[in-house]
Image (cartoon, rainbow, N blue to C red; front, side):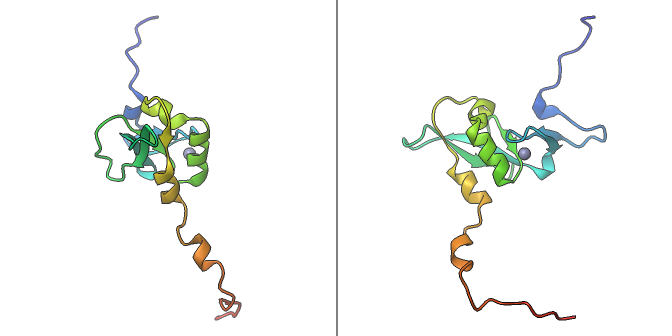
Length: 123
Ligand SMILES: [Zn+2]
């Protein structure tokens, strides 16, 4: 019964076609790694002990966590402190970098233009 080999770590999981999959720390769904964002923890500047930053090139050293590029997943992970747990860090973590990445920075500026009225059909 005990003939099972050690399980592969979550970061080594692959689909049957060989494509690597990762578990989202927010919604816990497993998705192709290519569709997700890897994040790592870097030492903070004193205000927070750790800063969670996106590792867009996936080359940063250290333990990584994976999340969908989706505000809801990030928010859920923040609420559950899932980043800290997945990255094995203790203390306050700063996720503003991620918030900024997944929030449109032009949200407030462009939504108040009354002359922007395109109801005409151009067929
Ligand atoms: Zn997710």
